[in-house]
View 1 (spheres, rainbow, N blue to C red):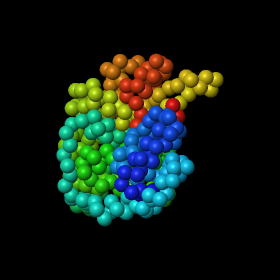
View 2: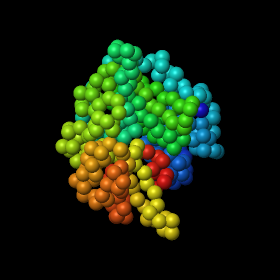
View 3: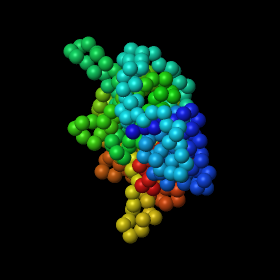
View 4: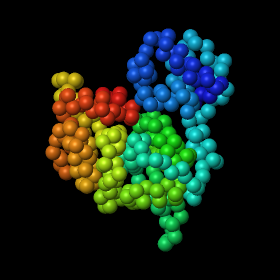
Length: 294
């Protein structure tokens, strides 16, 4: 459930809780078990605040009087179906930026570009980002959703699979598919096509960092190196696209990291503890599941 407050009150609620508890934005996000980007979006009132977060923040603050509506979690999907520009709608063409580079990394990681067809005639075009319905929920419904909307002025649809624990952010739009295909991304099976990071990203260190963030947030993981010492952490990147795997490893090297060799033909790791700290400060996570595990 999502809570709709009077204009300005959602921001006031968040700032009041932060100030009264003498929290930083980082410590507040950690306390609420959400990502800092999600907290920022709620503070800017770009999206409605979840009811469970509202209840935590509202203790002893009396903001119930400002509640206008309580909406089901699926309201954004329903609204998207009504307001979407559809399969043939126009898109805003964004400038090459860190946000766009990060979205490219996300698509290369857990995304797919589809052209659904019936016979020889193409019926629909879409870009879909997949994730775990619980672990990636915040990341998909807030961060990925907002990237598509801000960059291209499209209305993504969010839905959960009935047959598995998967959740998807889906954009049906031919112009958007054509945009990424012209950039060099490819439709269909990414392993077969051996799609790689576009050249325009590789020319700029800041864009490489943003793209790596998207790749790790989707196909990366962070875990303990030893059960005896919880402070020893390791970041890994796993992908069955050999061309992308090698390219991502080379990007880390270019950024001054020392990744392992490719292991079992499908992943490499960062194990030097000073480089784990450097990753956190230099590249960061936008996926709250990685932040929480760290």
